[in-house]
Figure 1 (tube, each protein chain N blue to C red):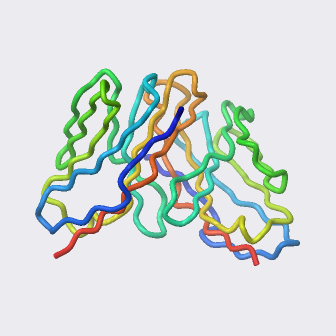
Figure 2: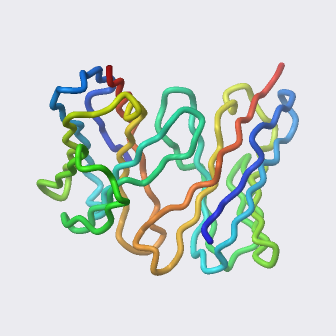
Figure 3: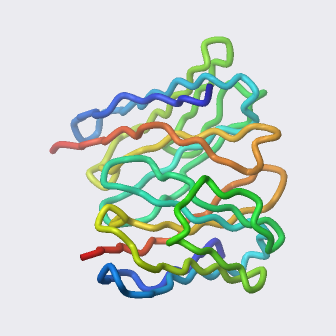
Length: 112
Length: 113
C-alpha cells in the first residue's frame, strides 16, 4: 500500500518547538520530503532525507527518520507566526515512475 | 533559480468553454507534472511527462488534455469541464533521477460555473 498519514492539526505558541509526524507504509521509499503550503500558494520544498539516513538538520528544521517503524518527523525550532501553514510529507520510491505520494497534510497554527 | 511559472493565476470558465493552463520552467528538468488540489487536501497527480512524452496518466477524464510542446513548457487544455473540476491546478518539474525533487509553481485557481 501507499498510504501516508499525518495528524490533521497542530497548534503551538510562538517560540516553542513544533513536531509534525508522518507515517508511511511503503518500505521501498528512497527519498522522503517535507513541503510547506501557505494559503493560496503552491508547495514549497522545505527539506528532504534519503532513506538510509536517520537524521538531517537544516537551520531551524530537523528531520528524523525511523525506517523500522516507518515514521518520519519534522521539528521546527523557535516556531514563528510565519510558519503557520499546511505541511505535507511525501515519499518517492524506486520504480514508482517519479510518482510522489503525499501525506494527508498537517495544518500548523502558531499563536502569539 | 528553482522557479516554475504558471499562468493564469486565476481562471473562471463556463462548462462549454475551452481554456488552457500554461506552465514553464528553465531549470533543465526533463520531467513535468500536473496535479489537482482541493482545499485542505494533498495534491492528486494527474499527468507526468518524461522527456516530453506522457509517461503517467492517472485515469484523468478526457476533458483534460495535457501537452508538452518542448522541454520547458507544459500545457493543460480544458474543455467541457464540470463544477466539481474547480480546484487549484499545480504544475511541477524535476530531474528524472537522483533526488527527484519536485519544484512546484504557485498554481492556477480554476472555478467552473
